[in-house]
Image 1 (cartoon, one colour):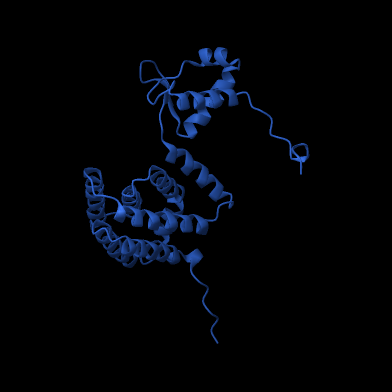
Image 2: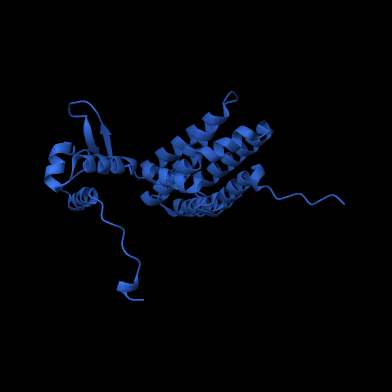
Length: 252
């Protein structure tokens, strides 16, 4: 197939020019984190597009986690360049999961791959003040999850933070971002599952025991054990959700 035989490219949207120039500015260093973009009128005149197109571009960049926009006046107002990649990725993953384009089972499998790799990498990485601080934070989250009066939703929030914190020990920013994105993408799905568990106290007891075992293996820099426990933990929880339990054999 030649280039002329391929499907036509989608029409270029007017706000694409704004997005491309901001990307180029970030690459070159002309635009830096914390910079405030010019106002709508200035951007529209600079790129020769309408103010409506500028607003659309700003909304897209906001959703992608590239900038944060706020109304009002002063140095904190307007569109400020930030970098929150997990926010945009979580939203995209969540929407595509809702459309059934990305099966939950595939999301779970990806999480297993990322977390087990991170556990192995963390075990081989040198221990630094940063890793010690991350372990302390993970330990604090573990203790918070052990509180007897903890509600299900609070437990899930702490649980997600615990896994992201452990993954950060690998020292890979992309893995950490992907973990945060996956966690955010399945938050509603996991919350619904937790709310519907009939034997929540029994499941909670198992989750707490699994978390402690995982933490102890990571703290001891035992990568293979931590990876094995993480895989078992994630797959066990997923198997408890009624929609994914194996069908019972018919009674004879």
